[in-house]
Length: 219
Image (cartoon, rainbow, N blue to C red; front, side, top):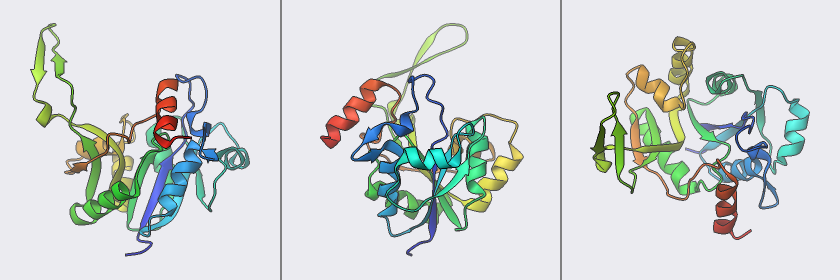
């Protein structure tokens, strides 16, 4: 159904570890966050694109630096990811929403559509991949165990939810820190349908990642 899902792009990061705000790195004639917003705008099911900006930045400055090619709705971020996402959810008007990191620019329209379909069918979904390397777990006493790679997942975004359910979860667990929205829903007992992600859907965490992404896009 056209226009039945809102996309929330979390672009409130400070970029301290990288040395600069990664969402404003140049990419394809715009910025990383602008590039991502453009991809979501091309998916028919997306009704609104809501972008969360840093709390220490003026809205006008953010919009100017982001170089969006289309109309977006902006929401001020908070000091923690959970606060930022909650502020973004307040702008949602659709029944369903997607949460996506503003530093995963190689997201494909196909993956967005598959997450939307799974969200509508199961109520919550997230892109994920099994690791290809051997995975070990270090126990408290110092011993190391090898885990079954088929039972371990590297979770990506986008992640899809019923907007009302996610908002209620953030209200209930507001004092806890979660690295992503799927972890929050896990805490409340919500089953998340994991669908196959994409190996190129990496998160920019270092200059090497940025160079890799530009190489993939050949720009």
